[in-house]
Length: 132
Image (cartoon, rainbow, N blue to C red; front, side, top):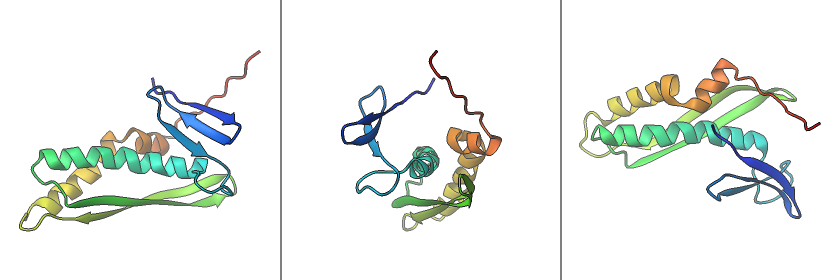
């Protein structure tokens, strides 16, 4: 099971995991914080990139640069439209197969391995539990 705790603090809002990592979040008017929508985009990008990188490297094609931009526009005030991942890569010099391998891996990760992307595409139910 995956789990995080999100709470209001004296300085705003923070999300924490069981390993001690923290992310400051807010509504978007504050400096130095992520909005919840930005964190969703981070989750999509992060899930893809942390899976693409080792799978590409394991096949002997470590990319010189591997980055991405993840974007989404609002389709409605409280609903996102499609999420777009745009890769930014630099291929190793002299590696004729690197581009083909990275593209195949990126597609496979998106279609089969990234839990976040797959959950969004399948429409994962979100439940709310209120204490009695």
